[in-house]
View 1 (tube, rainbow, N blue to C red):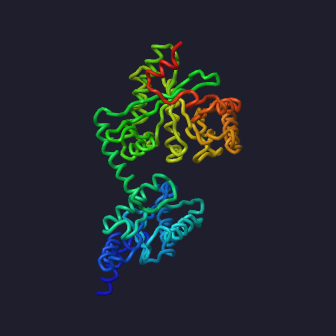
View 2: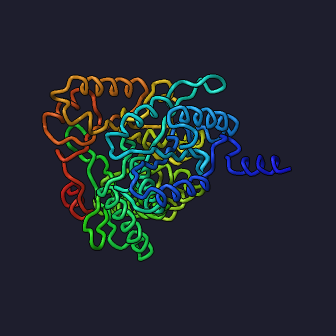
View 3: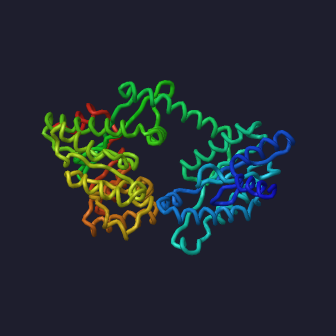
Length: 434
């Protein structure tokens, strides 16, 4: 009877899918280590499967098999007594004793990355994925279990967001995390207070004669205590909190209303492009909201271009493509932003409901001196022509760049060579006067 009770207790300590000890056992281990050996250093880390693993989340049986195999691979590196299953099914927790510095962890980090990304056998031979990791050192980065876990979570979250290969906590990361959380609080209040501090600027899109054909509406935010906050900083926060849906609806309505006013005042048949994220497209009422905005302003869809990124199309390709088709049925044009920097593939490009390819700024910057980037631009132009698409080069700053891009067949240009983004009144004064 005692043996059966012991076996049952042992089973209850382990995760049923991976056989690893649970997070509860980890907490006991960490508390005991700090209590019994307060001066003995070690590293604690979180290992989370990356976005490639997340894309198979609809195939539960496959996920279970892959999770188990991945657990075995990590166990080979760290040993069973130092590896634990998180409460999240795509996450592992690890202890590495005797570590004093990041340099000592580098071999482990590289070995882990290599091991997890090794090819899998059937039924997952067609899949590959990696991981993100966040680690903190005791006692360098934390003196309690709570601080240790919080700081490793901070490191994981930041490096996961950046999609880079960092993994270790630092004071600078902690400060960045606190700044982000503060901005999140301020943004929530701002959105609830009639979008206080948010405004829209417009950047012209021109043809080879520098005649304005359209403009891109861009969101800006002046946050109390921070001043002007970069979109690279506040857009991810808006997406993470879900506030992007409110902000997205606001910029959509405001920019179309502005286009309507410009058309009535100047006679120019100008259009506007607005960025849309995967979070917005996944929202069940997004299509209805766009249609409602157009109808309420008595505007046709042809006045609007929506910009999506390649990563957006890859999140839920079938559903996203279906929604883009519905938007195009309204007369709305679809732009593929930053083409060439993500998951570009000729095998699916011709199947996507897009009208314009935007050539990323990184290819434009040194197009005059970097033959590879020039070749990329030529290839994009060739692809665009063969598929009957329009090409737009963004980030153009110099006349020589402008001339070369036009020579290569680029249809539209956007960048400081024409103008930085400006307020609506200045845009009208500079570009819509006959």
